[in-house]
Image 1 (cartoon, rainbow, N blue to C red):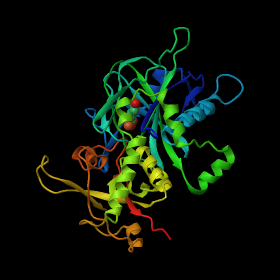
Image 2: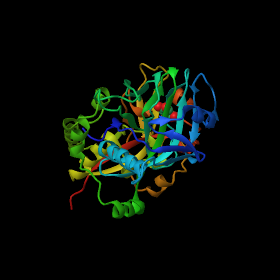
Image 3: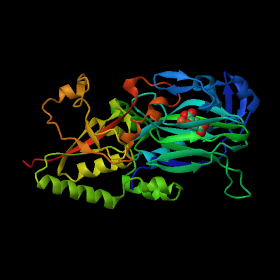
Image 4: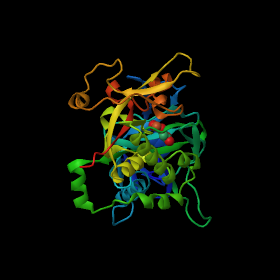
Length: 395
Ligand SMILES: O=C(O)CCC(=O)C(=O)O
Ligand SMILES: [Fe+2]
């Protein structure tokens, strides 16, 4: 098992003060609901390249990050920054081991009775934005469960504060998930549901080196992740959909066998979707990151990542076969710079992709129509990637 696509964790009630446009609006454990409602605007969402409002699809209100401030009620220390750092660590340990990540507040969302948000993947706000963190504030509501879906497996999460012991104050609930996880918010039937939403960004290159100098080394080896995670997760369905060690060893053996039998290159689809520009080793997630790591570490392979496109062989959904081709090789405008630069890269043959693959998902009309919080320019849309494995020539 490796880095997890979703993690839920409790976080102690924080008494840090909340400000909206500079006006005190209570604390995270006692927000001024009326004021928050007053300061909020109707939420829209992305429908392809357009941003629209449609209460049948999404009904809710929001306050953008630029209008939100945090402070301390009590003297000493910086409670909000401590909270933020503890959330960040929880996310790194479980979802991005060995990476440096930052949390950026995106907005505060409010759902009153009737409020809901139908299935979507979150729109991404930069090439390094790879996951979302939600923290439910201490208000009371009924309904409004948060449902995640991956490979057809649905998991339910409740962001209402929860008590671990009758004599303790309830904990706030946080949940983080990769942006390409489909999710929805069920209708709230009573009360008001208020959630802080953060973009989780993966820091790379020189930015990363600077951050490491500042904060020391927070990197955790992949193998501790399963231990860290097992105490926390309820998401068995999702866990099973990620790679396990045995499966990875089998994949390695199979690739070696294919290479020995004369196959020059073995290609397969990445499990996780991202922007085309984010199909890079430093942004690999979940089982993709784990598998890549194993393939490279075993020393026998050269591994490349490429954007791929899905092509179906026939009109009939049941009998047609799905193949992936390198982006640019199949009736596509050949303006992809990466590809031009890799002219000496020999074309791999097309490869099969399984029925439930993520790449198939983004080809569906449903996905094209719903792109999260806002519209997505075509170049920023979710894209499928492929991992291509050649034998490493021994010198
Ligand atoms: O309110 C929530 O739990 C999350 C809402 C959501 O999915 C979104 O705003 O993208
Ligand atoms: Fe979302």
